[in-house]
Image 1 (cartoon, rainbow, N blue to C red):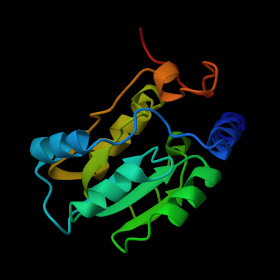
Image 2: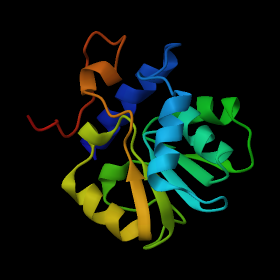
Image 3: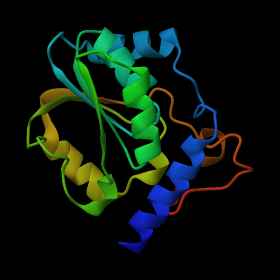
Length: 166
């Protein structure tokens, strides 16, 4: 519980500063994901660590029904303010807390996007994520970066939680 609070505080502080988590969403990145996963309109997508929501909004623009999740209430408020497409929603959720977000059940997700969160997710998350994905569904991490580049502008400060393996 203590680590969950520390993670939320870190990311709330991060999103209070007018900056974007690197890398910014690029059209090429969205096209690459679409080419790899061939998502069909109306299918369900979840983004873990959506921040201000630009990639989740890109998923919705492809016709997917997208939900962006983030640890930070500040980031989620910014996402809700920035993106007002009925196909995209944003929710606060700690994926390291061991429970699924409301409404997410086994086999209910078609696309799972983890752009800049891979280094923060643990093996328990991936075990649960595999169950949540519909058979034949896919995961996408096209913009995955190191924690230092993900948190550009924070002086190399890293959020609490699992560390990347070297």
